[in-house]
Amino acid sequence: MFFGRYELLRQIGRGGMAEVHVARLGDGAAGKLLALKRLRPSRSSREKVVKRLVSEAQLTVWLHHPNIVQLFDFGRIDGQYYIAMELVDGCDLKQVIHPPGAMPRQLPMEVALDVAAQLADALRYAHRCTDSHGRPLGIIHRDVSPHNVLVSRDGHPKLTDFGVARVMQSSEESMPGLVIGKLAYMPPEQARGEGIDHRVDIYALGATLYEMLTGAKPFDSSSRAEAREARRPAPPSTLRPSVPASLDALVLQAMAPRADERPSDAGELAEALRHELAAHGGAPKRHQLAELVREALDERVRAAFPHTRQLTLRDYTPEEDSLIPRQVTAVRDMALGSVPDAAVTRQRELPRELPREPPAPTREATRAERPAEQRDDDARTGGRALAGWPLLLVLAGVLALGFALGRVSKSRSPVTSHGAGGS
Image (cartoon, rainbow, N blue to C red):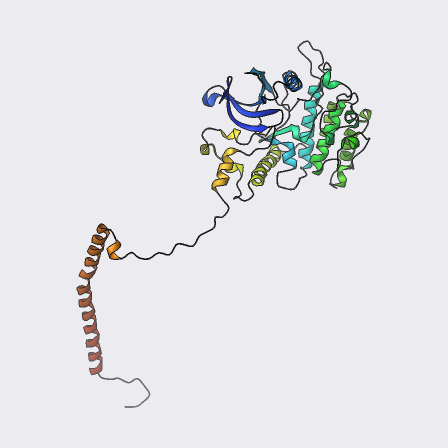
């Protein structure tokens, strides 16, 4: 199926506003694989929805950073607006912390610090980004959370979804009283609909780090009324005693209820995180996070098909589905969770254990019921068997005669005694 110049290979997500496809730009194996997000037809006529997609495209086009998902194209085809962006082969950070069907996990401390430092670098870049004339754009993400951090199979985190971000020049979505974002990661001033600045992203990153360290959100409940309050979470060490006091203090500072109590910018937070990382033994090996991503993807398959044989995505090879390359099989569900089709097919083909039915009773067919050819074969076989009987009888007779003669000769021989006795 083609959408303009893009070949849509498969849908990987669908939400209330948009649907996301793996798309190929170009011909054959040389074509570039992308994630194409397009507004659903029912939403393309809604001005606010279109404005949000346009805003995301206008913001992301300026952002070129290794820890931010890159945008390649934006436009409208047959009345549908779309964004073509980088395809990340992996899953989101939420699935790494909370694998589907499994218990939440606390990430290794060096992994959590390294991911948080890279995301702080991305936010610092976005906050300081300028347009082509060098004017600051004043980008604020407003929705930093584990849901909006993609992690590739090789363990590389990327910040995504600038759909609710605001810039200094925006009007409608930066108006006081409008609340956009996830309450669990939202500072009080944002929940109250007050004026905000880049420090709301610092708070949200602190909450994300808290969740990576403890496997739990900072607050048990997050109603809007509670989010408006100047609340402080319990230190991470209450849930994970190995967290040092200095890291406790850094997380709580990033999540301070008052904006002026937080680090002044994301760069300062990144520097503090790397200081903690050095004190903890240095940066982790990339394979540590990559392995967590693979485990999260495996758990997603097992959760979707609990009654099938345990199958991991590592069992999947490109030869099993010649139409969809390997990197397409585990792309991040950017709207709703989905399981790779090829893995689904194999799961259905490989049940854990099939019930064994007792064999049906059988009887040997009579000679009359057998085909003529089989009857002829039976006759020839039987003839060959009967032809061997005379020879067997002759051999048996020879053996019997030899045995009898041996007994007679023994009875005629003298008896010699080796017992006690004299001459």
